[in-house]
Amino acid sequence: MTDTTTHAAGPAEHTVFMSRPVLHYTANSTWLNDPNGLVFYQGVYHLFYQNNPFDNVWGNMSWGHATSEDLLHWNEHPVAIACDDREDVFSGSIVVDEGNTTGFGTPENPALVAIYTSAFKEGSGLEGTQAQSLAFSTDAGMTWQKYAGNPVLNRGSAHFRDPKVFRYEDASASFWVMVAVEAQHQQVVLYRSSDLKEWEYLSTFGPANATDGEWECPDLFPLPVDGSPDHVKWVLVVNINPGAVAGGSGGQYFVGHFDGVQFIADSDSLVEDGNTNLRQCLWLDWGRDYYAAVSFSNVPGNRRIMIGWMNNWDYANSLPTSPWRSSMSLAREVELSTIGGLPRLVQRPVLPAELGPSIYTMEDQEIHDSTVALPHADPASVLRVDSVHVIDAEILPGSAGTTTLSLLGAPGGDAATLLSFEAATSQLTLDRRNSGNTAFHEKFASAESAPVTLEDGVLKLRVIVDHGSVEVFAQGGKVVLTDLVFPASGNVRTQLSVEGGMATVRKLTVSAVS
Image (cartoon, rainbow, N blue to C red; front, side, top):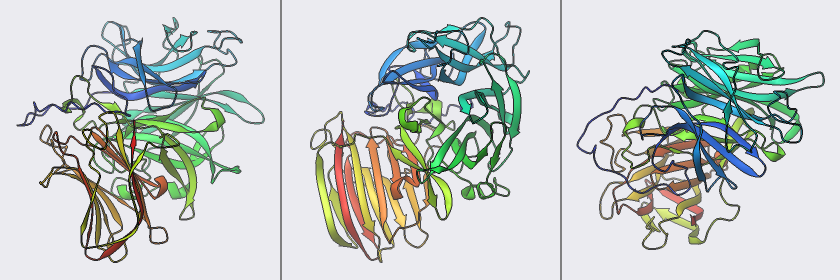
């Protein structure tokens, strides 16, 4: 991943947001960006990521490392794969080499193998080139050794990066597949290998749909449609920067077929002149802050779990946090469901099966042109400082023109993050223009909207409010919006407002998760 962020000075540049997220992973005192090498192994989820070990801005790209048993609470470990005088270590993936195809491990103790992009430096002999390299671990991912034969795949390109590798099997063959990008050509390139060391070109996909920025961090995986093993489609994720639907960075996807050689997108996944018709493209998230999303390898039960970088290259290096800068999204379990007659991704946040104590419940209440106070996101009262605010709601907008959740609002003031549903346009909007500190960068203040179809007249919302972020999962995860927010200290007011008619709250609960 290359740094495209510029710094911006402003009156609030030195206003520092000190409330570290609770459930969203942050490095202790350094910078992070793209999630890398996501793998489940021996009961542990491993999150590697682009990391600057020496500062809290982009640079010195290495792989940081954190582990978790529940995808909610993370332990940071020392840098896993470090940059050196020859290369920066850019994004990639990890596989469990069960068949010992590389010879790095043994059948009894298979190696974890990282496939990453070497961004070669001046004096390396390959300066200006991005190529794919290997590192391996034989102690369950805790220490790593770079392969002496690196790089293992070099196209002589300056923008060939972000390999996602998986094992492909059908009735006649079994081999490794690499999905990478020629970033500035807006192309996904596919290769195959028997041993992760020698690679054979397969095919190219793209350009297609949104192409106004660089394509990065691809992923390709199969999913059953509506849970049916007899109806399996393939999903190709392609992140783009800039040129996403909400501006700057974002993730698009395609649904189609992969035969071990070529990915062919379904015609209903393709949009004619996608850059003009961005809202017709398929997006992982309609907010500003979900990028470089990729999925875990080796998860039991063939579950597909993704994590994204909760940031945007438009302003990433300028976030007003200290000593860390940048965080990951919540993990999301993704499935393919039939929506409007077509297979589309549904995403659900990974949270405890049983949330913490329900601190507020409303049922079957009609609200007519008025406002209802909800429990404040206040660590000094109903929520502890180490907890997260989760709002689950089922609302019938009825005759109301606008139904709004006001989050992290100023006591007695107008500042707040607003989540509003407009009945006339069927648009759900997350508005952070008056959310608190927005002056640290000219591109931060924004309002993002997404089309939402009511189901039997009902708007369903799951809203996760952590320190510094709001993640919205609408209609059971069919529509998602993620935004960073930096409210002033003491901005904790939460309320539900109805304007222009009457809405009915079928059920609304506020819970604490810690």
